[in-house]
Amino acid sequence: MYTLMHGFYKYMTQKDDYCVVILGLDNAGKTTYLEAAKTTFTRNYKGLNPSKITTTVGLNIGTIDVQGVRLNFWDLGGQQELQSLWDKYYQESHGVIYVIDSNDRERMEESKAIFDKMIKNELLSGVPLLILANKQDLPDVMGVREIKPVFQQAGALIGRRDCLTIPVSALHGEGVDEGIKWLVEAIKRHAVVRPPREND
Amino acid sequence: MKGGTFRNTQWDPTLLSSQIVSMQFCVYFTLGLLVFVANKLSGDNYSLDHLFEYHEIHIYDMGGRLVICAFVLNAFLASLALWCIVRRAKLCLDFSCTFHVLHLLICWWYNRSFPANASWWLLNVITGTIMCIGGEFLCLQTEMKEIPVGYAALNQKSDV
Image 1 (cartoon, chains in turn cyan, brown):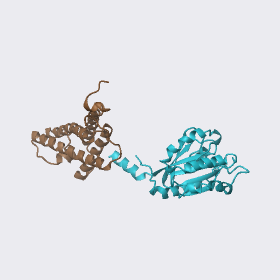
Image 2 (cartoon, one colour):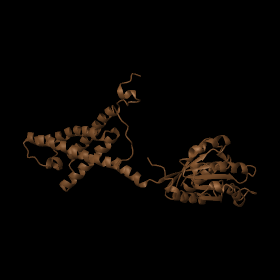
Image 3 (cartoon, chains in turn cyan, brown):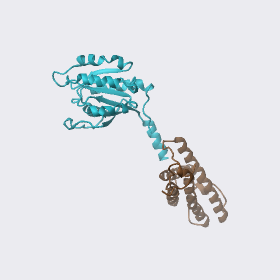
Image 4 (cartoon, chains in turn yellow, brown):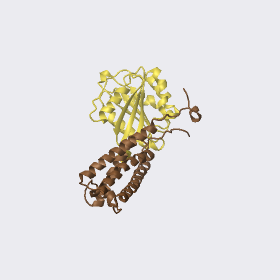
């Protein structure tokens, strides 16, 4: 009877399970953003000291519960050598977060090129896309108004999908809340096409 | 297919409910048979009281002792039922407790009062233990068998 009741309880309390990939150039702030998201949405979570966040090799995994669903984040390494691994995760992704280092003007074109390559992939067709202009806390930074036109050139590639570009400062947690909530709503809308992961 | 098979471990309420009901029926069936034999031996009139009336559990005369023996012997048969119906060692404790909880509820309803007789509780704890340990022992014998791997295993035993 315990097995029956325990299974019933888990069945009744299970949440929809979605996966989100966090992409972008190295040093754009992807892992810092993941830590900020966990700090914002997980009670009693203190978060990693930002000074201890180093280059991601492989991926970091984070999970948060927000608005009745469970989001599993795959924070992938952004170095050139690691970008070839990205497409392995696209098939199971329900959402994409692309992080841009707004302070790095020299590499903005490089970031755009990688973005174009990523967005072109058929496995990500129609998947909600959240573009983050990170490091907005720094002075003399490129605002959304400057960044949006650069990535808007990929409008044809973005195609028909929910898309949002917002300014954030992952270091200070600003704009994190807004972005995640928007993403959850977009993923729910897209659940008809790409249903949540099977719960075993 | 020869030998063991893999079974999915997803939660299956239909299977679990069916197993609970089956266990209840099988164990009460064998208990009924054994108590019937005990009544024949002691010359008592056969009635449901010997199964559910908690005052019947006593050692004051031959009839009471035979009923107790029937319950204990039935615990071993219940182990066989666990082995045939449940077939998972880790679920034996669960199903053993489930059976005895349901038995408690039935006795409670049958007597219109909570079983307060120490001998009834002692007997049920003992039979629960026998049922659980016996069932786990039998299930482990089956679960510890070799799992066939590869095509060769389907036709012949491998020496490697």
